[in-house]
Image (cartoon, rainbow, N blue to C red; front, side):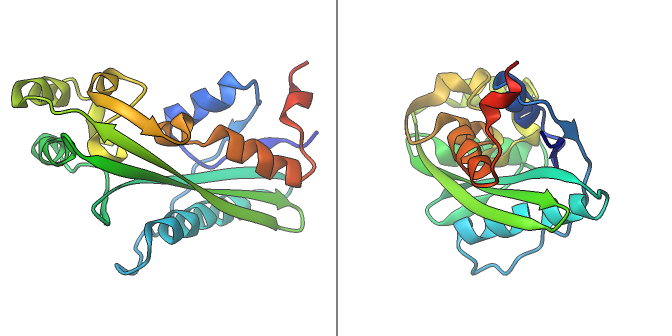
Length: 195
């Protein structure tokens, strides 16, 4: 069975791979994340996941690389990670009572040979109305500062989520079912690692 590499420093992505007992090695990548502004969100996340996978591939000779990129989209505008607490609060206030979308681009790259699969997952999330004091306390917890859209569905922000349509794990940052199906196309059965 090939060695699996995760081209991400996200603790959430590591946790999700651990949850399905998929052993992996984290490999750091540094990529240019600038993109044309008119590129649709699905194309953005797929392109960035490809860049991350290729950056990891330059450091390896053999193995399978998993790379992902997640964005939150509200009214066709991509909301990235907040720059500071004030920015996090402003993003969260925009999400209140609204429905937004979460896109994750996923690339699986196999070495040697650089066989590459890229796809994306989209999930719709509805947030309830929350008052400013609740949002302020959430921001002060520090949780939203390293997350696209300034919230983590798997953490304290779960109290703001009224409902989702689609893959929950996509909102966390790694659409597990999509990943497993992509790995199957590479002749890798995740359940074979469950021994």
